[in-house]
Length: 168
Image (cartoon, rainbow, N blue to C red; front, side, top):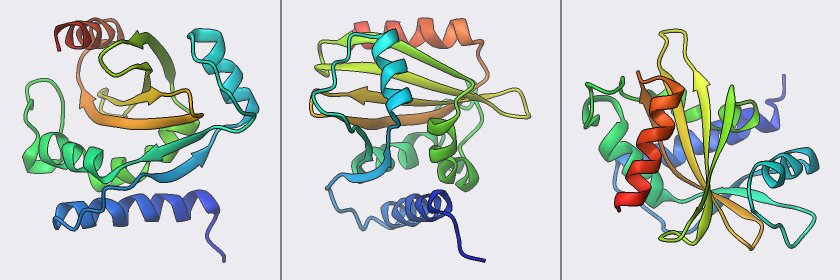
């Protein structure tokens, strides 16, 4: 049976993550998804993002994967009191979380990053929430910034993210 495109992307993300773990980093962006017109409309309806073209993409950069590995993965998790470490399965499921989040939140335009900022939340069976932070830009590319697990409520996640963005 031929693997689906989504499974190929999952395998690619995981292989890129393994390269990052071995310090084989290439600093270019990799496109991992194309937004559907419906997804673009949803983002526009909850935020101020303006797409210049009819097609928009989600990209991933090894430097962000390195951050995820160094701060939120397995034994490297820096905030174990706030959530469980990410696993390979969760890393591979980035595409699924972006495709079908339980909740999509716009934090608005963040001047420091010069971009609209979004949180994609997905509840795990263990009652933790996987959070993917995405920045949007005017060039029709959304960029994965970070990913982590949290034991906090959705309200507390949003509050903490806003505080973090305002204090940095």
